[in-house]
Length: 199
Image (cartoon, rainbow, N blue to C red):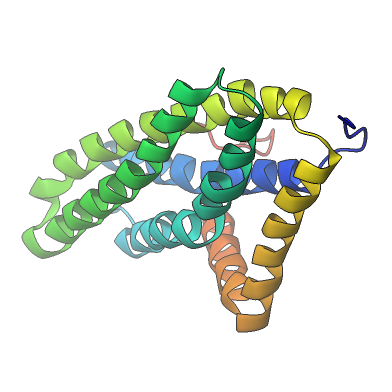
């Protein structure tokens, strides 16, 4: 087995996409936590943009490549992470359902008024906890083992899949739209002196 020395491109892409997703979900959490103490109503349009990003970006760009390539290759090489990978794949499916539940709760706020906001707030808290735990498992348990057990040929297949995914979204304009949306979201969020959200 030829162990790859140079960092796999897929790992850099996964980590970058995790950072983008963290920015969005942490921003959503910031909005709902700040709302009770604010003199102005929460920006529901921005919340809707965040939920659009959360629902569409992971499902079209992020999760399929993890499931079909990274996780599948790991399970070809070792079974030590079978239970963790099975749980992550299930979470990918459940995460989309949770995100749609968030969207339904946001629509309730928009149509029924701010008396529905506490329910939306509670669901956001649950979702952010869920998704951060999900990403930590991938970064702290899955990726380190992947570096150990996957060889250069494995990484070539995985890298090509993640890079092809980016090329496809560029050609169709989807990635440009996602990038535009992410820029709009991140530029709309207040940051502390350290450049991070205070949540």
